[in-house]
Image (cartoon, rainbow, N blue to C red; front, side, top):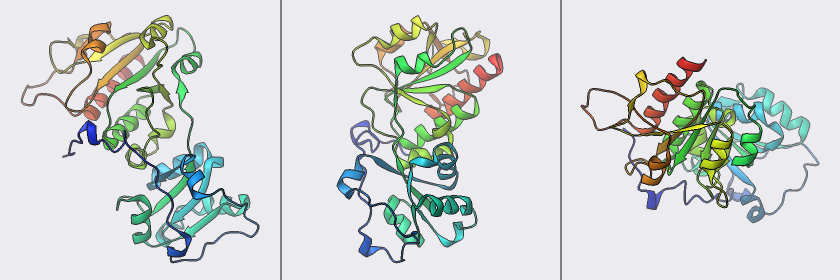
Length: 288
């Protein structure tokens, strides 16, 4: 069972990209081709790069945006899985290093790295207006609006389900930091399949969505319309609320539709990532 993380101590909201371990502490010589381009100082790189770890997350980054890969760390057991990546590193003169599990534990600050870690250039976050311009008019499209969902494991699980059921993008609160490595690992590649946009600060996000033909649905644990007996609009934004606190009353008030997932009532509600999977699956059933 996932332990809830208080929003005030949320590691995603307060995330800092930590500098790589000093070169002198790394136990193996880098397998780096000659004439590797000089890298900027670590302090400068911190703002430009993020550490992605987990087999599927790293492979998805390489498949989608290989030019953003800046360095590769992996254990000997992962060499066969990442042979094409390492061949590309040699060709592009990108450094890679074979390390032990303990070294990856320190680099990623977790034991759940699955034997591989990439240093990757941050993927830019779209503005909401730019996102909407990329979605063809009158086409079916599902968007997700995350209202304070901060637990990285829930964010990752949510993005994995969103990718599976074809969500077009996820909208994050204005000023949200880059996705942490934990969220990308749990997403199992879904973070590369679902673009991220930020809610505007100087414009009314709801107004922009309505102008683009989207209906907005708030997901509530009770007293909403039954998900399974409701015809969902083909252009729909689903608002998913924070763990524990739920979504803001203002967002619920402004929504066109309030949806509830029916159940036995034995528990108050589902975990936000579980709720998201159910909602996405029903939208997919109606509009695939």
